[in-house]
Length: 242
Image (cartoon, rainbow, N blue to C red; front, side, top):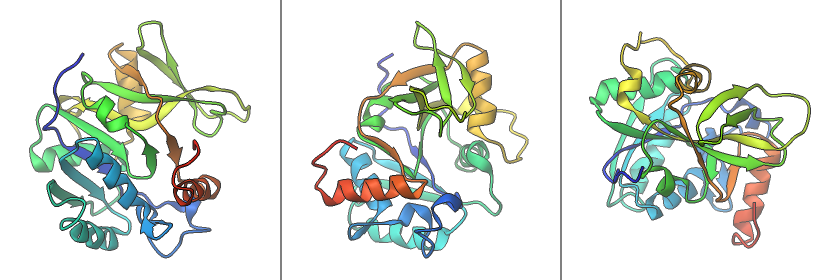
């Protein structure tokens, strides 16, 4: 490990419908959910830039127009020293199909860093960008029932994934950020597919998917209770742990 990956692009998965959040955020796409006086994505980009990310590709579908307008505004602000691209999918491609499509359209080679637009992870990008691919960031949570768990062996390799259960229990979960090889998507059939249900289990079964424990602040704003918790955290000046 310890490869310098400073020039790799961050592929940001930002095309989902955000259905679980629509009861409280229904006028803008989920990445633009208002937090204090700014969109959630503003804080994400600010964090990523602070960690040294200088090349961004946003993978879009639902609500792409307002997201693009926001990104264009940020080209003169947070992203003024960064390379910015976006891809709008004609149909939803799933997380895996979105990444495969970007790699194909942009002719990307080597490693790519992939992150969820709706998952806050303090310092995750700076940690992951120096890890050999393929690797997945994982975080320990007190209640993994909402997410499903990641089984990690004593070599810090991911051995399997376990589905969500009704039982509340602690465990390791997918942190929503991964370092992947563009070659992992060779032979893509141009159909939508899921990283979580397709590529990750295949890599784990082959014994090559590394777990990278991350201990920074973590929250997925996909449901109202956690969205409101993030809002309170920002409004408090990040004075407490999430």
